[in-house]
Image (tube, rainbow, N blue to C red; front, side):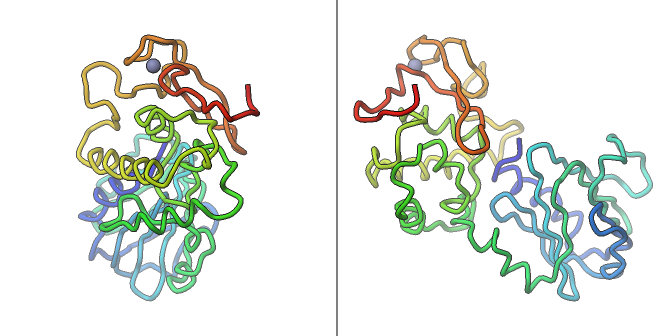
Length: 269
Ligand SMILES: [Zn+2]
């Protein structure tokens, strides 16, 4: 599942192939042939939270969101693809390459000026993989009225608070900080909150340089709890548990012993 680091890695992978190149042809599923950018030059490729932004000369940008199952391949122009063309949602051809996005739910060509005012992007919190990061801004966004009673697992996934954390990091961060996924945000202080996002940035940065996303950096499993329901916790040997959380009912994994629920909390059993 693509997370913030996936998009940064993708931007880093695509940049050398696309920057300064001329678009020969482009098409996407929603808008068809994108004739208006034929002949345009690729000026910038960047990740912003979970979006990939490709800026082109002439004031156009492609905004790509990979969703849950989106993939991106690059091929020498004219070579057969490794995936079904029926699942291609955006094809960008340069003189030398074809960049193909498969199953990416959003691949929109928009005016660059409008893009910068897109509600979903404007609302995004600080990018955890940005060159610099403003933890105070994250804290302010997290401590907005209405968030106090929200479960930590949901707060971490809320891209309006900080952009980049996906479902894997969510479970792993809470395990590493020994916090229960259903504990309300109000149960942790600002120092703990800062610690969570600081660790998120550190892990994501480290993963920019690894072949596979890992949060353990040890032999064996790549993750402490993610995807390990029913197996022994690496720390205490209790069985890892999981449950569905939030509006999107995303799977959350945790160790019931290492991540004890705060005594004051009531609600989910
Ligand atoms: Zn444990």
